[in-house]
Length: 95
Image (cartoon, rainbow, N blue to C red; front, side, top):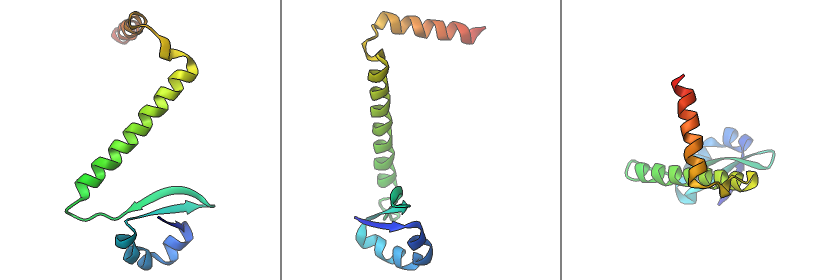
């Protein structure tokens, strides 16, 4: 996988677009840190690529939520406690 700086993306954009189909993906960096991912797509695989990307983001978000739950100790809450929280939130919303 090729890494390129924002500067390279700006100054060598034609070269980047020409190389992208062969590279499949490139990581854009700012100050040496990754900030974006360029992925080669076409009209035949756009929906599949978007679905895979969105699935990966959702999986990452779920993992972050689970990690935060463990850190806060809320991973051990019983179903009765969960139902009580839901009921309290719904009653507040009705007011």
